[in-house]
Length: 315
Image (cartoon, rainbow, N blue to C red):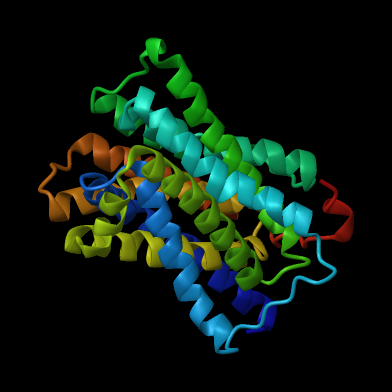
């Protein structure tokens, strides 16, 4: 097995692993939000990510070099994810339901496919396009069968949730482009650092103005909150960032993005295992549609993954 094939197989493994981690993150997010404001949760989350990754960097185990590299594009990447994505998600969910958020997030692969075709010149076959829509339909089918629907009075919230799709799609496309210049660790460290500094400034400003700084500090002594943050910060942010950035250096953004819908299946399984939620026939049907869509997107196209070329990196 040659190095390229091994790298591609590892990339697909990381794509599935990411979906599993994100699927479980919904449970831990709910646990954290019981004790803290969304912005405070994000501050602690990215503090954990940045501090943990800083340890091997400080010890010299991970080498970083940003000199002569497109820092402005890396900053744009961080503005889309984590800053744009999580900020839009937090405020969007204040005006819309989590079910509406789940439905909107399912359209991320479609948005990614469009943006990747424009900026990376990625092409997809008709069968791949149909497979992407099949995975999206699988997620939407599950939510609709649960009785979820769109409330147009929440148009502001829905708009922000749709923009989270655009932000994540933009991140996927730009991260693949930047993989030519930065290592996965360099991209991840930059993203985590920008996220940590920005959310920390916002949190501290909010608490100082409100005279509640002691409440912010007290969160570090809450066992349940800290456990949630360890998972969200180290596993759901840091590990997924490293693995996603690696996968995007090997797999087209349009192929990678469809794996996000697998997180719906994992969240269903997690709900059944840990909080006793019922799994019904429509859950199984929707899950099969999602899996079929993921497989179709990645195996019904060209035989080989299109290599990333210099002339496709113009953004």
